Length: 251
Ligand code: PGA
Image (cartoon, rainbow, N blue to C red):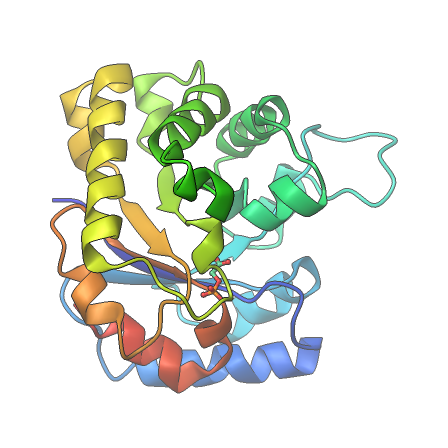
């Protein structure tokens, strides 16, 4: 059975105090009981991780939103996977479209980040997805194929078990425009088949593939209903504890 996961990507929002309050509100709601087999993960800014670790129960996962390609050394301003793990996180988002487009992160760099994350016992939440132009040209599958082939190259089958994939069409992120359930299922199915081709049937069956892009309480159920959609990576709606938890309860 694949894990069902709802992860909240807070992006560059909240002060430390606001983040603690948000995490506590999520924890309070989650402690009332979670739907069978559903895990939740919070991805606050780096500065919040260690503090939030102290106020949430162990069953709520913690993620960073990015990590350095290198392990340590003279890289002013970078945060390594080892530091993130030592702050109490178990996951790290890699290759979010905002990192790819605004900070020009390349497939090769992302491949390094995934590897250093795994080496430091973090589970990468590897993001992929096409932009509007690529969707309109009908090349979305090829774009996602290339992102996965290059970003997740040379990973052993054993290590691959730690990876979670998030399919996030860029045109749906923060735009209020969600992929239709049909579009989401089509791409998730494509990704699962690609994993089968690259890493075999077992990995393809076991890997959780999350949908991201304007997911909210009103549309989560119809997206999560699809056979190849194993949950969501939630941006805007994760900043309100009630909305985030309503999404987590949509299965
Ligand atoms: P959104 O962001 O839910 O605000 O569209 C999703 C994401 O960027 O992960």
